[in-house]
Length: 255
Length: 255
DNA sequence: CGACGGCTTGAGGTAAGTCAATCCACGTGG
DNA sequence: CCACGTGGATTGACTTACCTCAAGCCGTCG
Image (cartoon, rainbow over all chains, first blue to last red; front, side, top):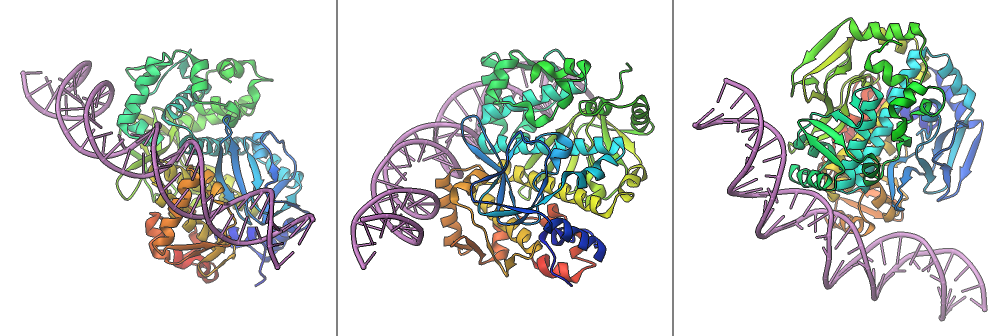
């Protein structure tokens, strides 16, 4: 057996490849490469589709810088990891990738992968989008826990849920039904029920929200958004701005 | 325009559907449904492929119970969210889904989706696997931040990295090169550099690890694994146990 | 009416954060 | 070969956000 590239090795944990598959993967991973020095960004938040990057050697990190300058690393990328398949489906990066040490990546031509995507059934693509945005929401939750305090976390969650309920047409103005107990909120935000309670009280006292009878009402959307340091980019609601006035109508004012 | 089901509404944020597509989605979402009462599990950790579940109404949560009994909710699922597409690719659930209120789901026959998957090119499937495990790792990081203390977090990270470096053949016995600064570790674990330092010292004092010259050596794998309350299930290294002795050789003893 | 689940509030404790000084390994230039 | 600068690691003293324990409250439902 030939010692192949790290991506192949990784994927083989899952599927057995034919020699042909393996040759193909190796070819992809070796034709074009590029190297970044330590502390350089391989991809930046906002970048659009270009080549796909596959880490071959070195160590990189998926991270985001928050408004206050703090950084949250959401994942370490080791050889065999793909940096940016999601850009295909999500249009633009919602976070950055930085090299921690000198890092070499294989560059996979956009259209090689594009073939896969465009040949997909419309529904399959939509499915991809769904998975990818789910991941993005997960990443945001990591930031919540790592770099936001109790008040910011709750505010962020409530604002996100407002957007999500609007998306599916289940928010009336700035209210939505959100039938969670404080204990469940605690389990979601990684705090204790007691502290959730105090934080809710604070948000209520500040006139940002009202939360009674399982219905959450956002009294001051702008203020809540700020309190949660919310930035809608990660939800990838691309069509809103342009094409579709109807969709835009649903969530547009929240972004 | 017909008011369609929540999945369609959600996906339309991203793609414009033809009337045909929309009809198809609606059909999928309405043929078979099932309702769960509040506090019932829709899916349990360990469940294998069955029907795919699409939330139609109610509120559910993606969660995991830790060994000490604490629960971490990783995501709220609202109408339009899919509970378990990943099972297709990952063989079994690595977490549970519970209904928080009475929740109705559409049941999508496994083979309807299976068609999509099996018709996929081997590489595309592998790509899916890659994305799905990435998500699983993200979820694990949420648990880290929400329900593990500093020592557990660092221990968990170091053990996970050992497994990942083994997977790509870049660990020598229980050592691997991990060229991160303490500040970067802090950004990844959501703590401060100072506290990372103290935690490292503790792990060193306990003879669990050695970390000098960018090389991390796990002195006592079993103990480190326990310290991080590590459970390999989320990495979905399915082939290891059975088929492939070579793959198993790489990571087998760690699981 | 009592019981129960969930919410609220207080008092006191602790893990982790902040600020700041010191140390150490290294690379570079005189 | 030593002086120096620099980035990172280490350690101490003090603060704080959040946790724990525990009691009381409130609405609803049998």
